[in-house]
Image 1 (tube, rainbow, N blue to C red):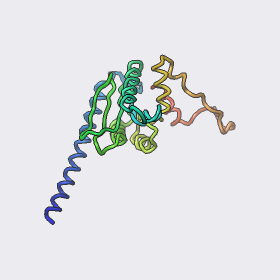
Image 2 (cartoon, rainbow, N blue to C red):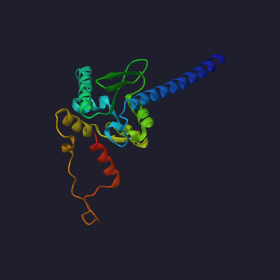
Image 3 (cartoon, rainbow, N blue to C red):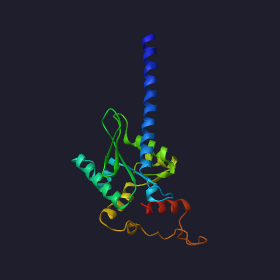
Image 4 (cartoon, rainbow, N blue to C red):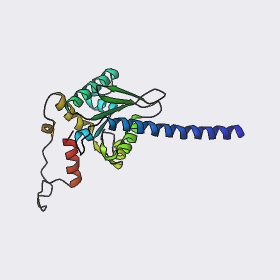
Length: 210
């Protein structure tokens, strides 16, 4: 019984140590990301951190079958080109298989690979919680979207950012890909019937800055 009790206590201590280590590593990553920013203030592209759900985004582009490593390299290349045209702090998170969480820099883009047993979703949520309103999360995963939104981050579907990524990489104006407002469902509404609710306008302004 003493051996079983000791094992349980040791396991609990290891879990607590693991949580503390994960929190410290997230804090270090966020500090490093903020240190690489522009010294200017305000809600500009330079002051925001884009967090891309890597495999979710690749799945949107063409699926996860085939040479996944080549697709991952292509995404990193595209994001690097995007960053050259639209200077920003850009992070892409992938599911990893290593014993520890890994990080690398590719063309100015920070690529994070989750540790074995932890999904990239958890890393994205941790980053969103640490960055708050400074964070912009790109994913089509509803659960991750909800958690990031609760943390104060702006949230966009992978398809929304993909349109802007393609436009920037092709040398086109990303604003040109925006869809015009639809016909209002209540034309008798007071004021401008085409005026979106305030949260929608705030979200559209953040998307337009990407």
